[in-house]
Every structure is written in C-alpha cells, then in structure tokens.
Image (cartoon, rainbow over all chains, first blue to last red; front, side):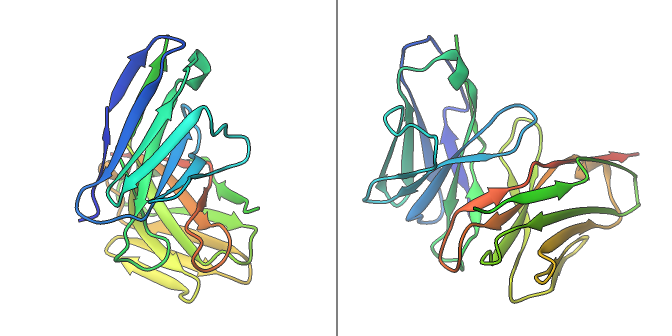
Length: 117
Length: 114
C-alpha cells in the first residue's frame, strides 16, 4: 500500500516552454500532497503544499506564478513549470499524505528529472 | 522555523557492523520524526518513523530513538548489508500537531563495504 506515482519520470524541454508533472496516489486518498525539488547531492527542499480543492501554499522564495500547482482530486496533483529555464533543471519529487494514517506520514513518488536546454 | 542537522555526512561500515546516524532539531513543537532511504535516481522511501510520545521504535534491523529534552533522534541499523548502502535523510515535522510539512536534514551517505 501507500504507492505514489509520478509522470513523466524524466523530461527534456527547451528554454521558454512549460512542463507539467503529474503526481498520483495509487491506492489511497490524499487531501494533501507536497512538491519538493532536489539538486544533485543535496537535500529535499519543500516548494509547496498542495491541498485538494483549494489553493496551494508556497514556501518562501518559491514563485507561485512560475510553479503552478493544481490538486483537482484526492488522488492527483500537478505541477507545471512555466517558462522553464536551465536553472529550473532539477529532480522534482512529490509526496502524499495517507488520510488513513495518523498525523505526518508522507509517501514519496519516484521523482521526475527535468532538464531544460 | 525548523532547522534539522544531520551527522555525519558520510559513513562507511563493514558488512555486518552497525551504523548510527544522528539528527538534531530546533523546534520544540515538532512531534513527528521520519527517516527516509533514497537510492540513486529514486524517490525517498519511508523506512521508519517515531512520534514525540515514544522514546524508541524498532522494526527488524532498524531502530529509531528520540530524546525530546535534547532535541535529537537517531537511526540505528544493525547487521548492515550491502543493500543498505544509500543516502538516508532524517526529517522533523514543522510546527505542532496537525501540521503536515516536513523539514529535512542534509542527508547521510552510508556505504556498506562487503
């Protein structure tokens, strides 16, 4: 149980284009999902908290107009990187909180490797 | 905000020996402390967690201890195997009960030498 998937697993795009990443909880419902980015050999940095049916909450320093988040259902959240630039190249990972568990458990997806050329 | 420090940054152990990773946190309101294992190119995998009302938790070869007074918690891996080689991250909940966000340590590269 507690499986989270991401699509695509990797993507290469040209500078100036937009890229959408999907995060799905496969066998549980998640009112809250989280989006992280991770640079090589570094820790996970929380970008935003995605709440089903409401606006996402962004961490300080993260541009909400650049990283658009939509949490349309209890099993799907999407992150769109708009007008991507080479500095946006990173490993993007989502996590989902299982409603059936107590406070806190987060299960991570396999990540999406974004390369902007 | 919450600040999570993780030590050491790298750890090499002989197969069969034990490995211990320590983390400290700053926010006394933190009440949930998970540990994640991340293999190269993959997402983090939850391996064990502990809540603030418990001092120790064990799951087969893995255990976690929590000292709330000192604000530190540790991961213990016994009888290490080559497949335990990975990066391990500790995390602490940000804020009090019901707050779901996590702050992560910088990670620890564990290498198990066969």
